[in-house]
Length: 535
Image 1: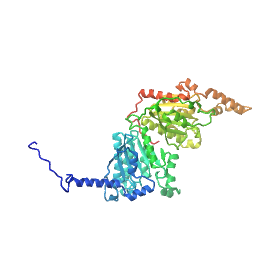
Image 2: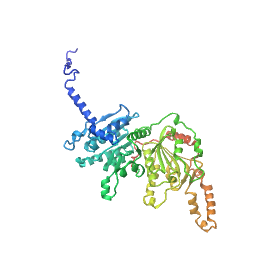
Image 3: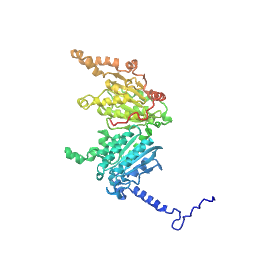
Image 4: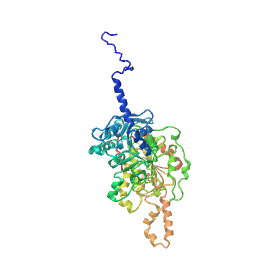
């Protein structure tokens, strides 16, 4: 032993067998505070949460993240001002925050705790969420939030409103940089609705999740309407009518599973690679079933989902906004192992026309794919834009322009295949070559023209039909002449507007080949090409 070294005193004794000395009380205090934070609002409030069919905040987090990956932050935070509210009943100030992994991918998570002061948002509560968003931005990782709150904490006045503003600002900073997913598993009212609306995806739980700016009482007072909270802002409303919800889940377990599936298609951030998958399902294959899927009758619908499943890997898709504007379908899938976004007109709903809602739905989806580097595949069977005074007066021109802008702005690889009809301005809007589409394919059944045969005959031969002895027979003759001249893809191919006319069975092969070549050509997304504005 060196001369100047001092022996370490033995602190063990009967009262302190571990030799912890004065630190023991500190460790006990830490454990006591941790335990209090984990208790949330207490056993009775947890039971009431379960009686409503809802999980607690920590139960939600546990279901979402990989085992043993959760690290909670700010568990010991409480309201800043002990004079405001019941401090003893506010462990964590009503929100659980931290970081974890989902399928090995790092994520930031926050979950509002309804058992603690109704999950109301005060200054510390908002600060914890804002801090979590800051962490996601710094670490370039997705953020998943669970909303279940009675709203702004009234006792804290304008400070709680300022907290919402701080969160909104972070939502915008993260937009188009890291994926943001919100699960609305309880009430979300007033200004609180704008944080989910600013995120990339909203998952609404049927029966418990509700979103509205003004509640039923205010609506009745102002408008005289007698409406329940479910009728005003429930999952059915936002899933099929308003388009606020991207996914609707029957329960929280399904909502969390949807969030995990969604993350499987998205990169960690715009600065990270897409999560590709190799294996037999990613190999090119021919699909003979597609050769006969288009009916001989031009107006007869067919199953666009079957077409999509035959083209993508393993026939698996994750449809976004399934019940809203079903005349256009938007879904995530993989093609040759690479995550892609698929936009497809559905001839079984409004013949696949573009209208107000379909245009906005597809535009937002294309922008989302472009923001996160996913190639876009468009399957086109569109007879045009929906006519009518309702559409014109409500701005179908403005909404259609969103879709044109989204496709024309896209910097990711884009592939388009015209399956059957592609008429007029809708042909252009559905990612034609004229908007910068990388590869335009067409099936032999494709019809690319300014308008359909009936409309064309009426416009071109109005006077001739008016003077005819047998207008119906003449109309049929002129219609057939028009179809012979234009009801095929070959005029567009002669002009160079269609790169290749392919047999339907080879569509998957061709798309995988082209996607590989386009990726090799150096389609690189900037670190943040644009935000993901809620159109």
